[in-house]
Image (cartoon, rainbow, N blue to C red; front, side, top):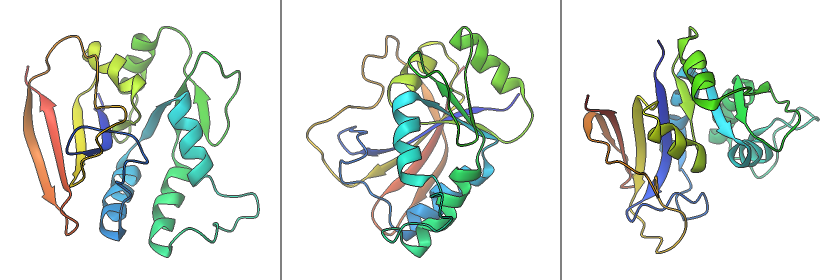
Length: 186
């Protein structure tokens, strides 16, 4: 069974808002690109799917936008090509190499985890909270940035039960950010 990995940027005070001052530099973008390339598929809620699509979908012209740095293009190409699953009760259809998750969510995620291929990656805020509540997340990967946001949504806010974790990987970046990956202690 492939693991479900929750990966997200966070600030020192736990803020997970994408505009909290945690934009990746070249080194961090290489890290995120490697994670996207190794993923067999990504799982998003509607909000994260639409946000990622608006930033990283290849334009119909085929050319990446002028605002994109050369070192961001490998990530853009990886996420653009990735298989995506979208959890939404408001969308009738999706595209961008995506399909809607149908049926009861926990059962659907278990089915996706049983598929072959690289790990199943999940991002965002609301969907990972539900998956954590059901004990479906196998790995938690956080890139902790040396920033205190002081506001915004926080990591797994509202989680009903404490989840004990063990560190399985740690990597420091020249920016002062630290990537940590944990697995639940069983």
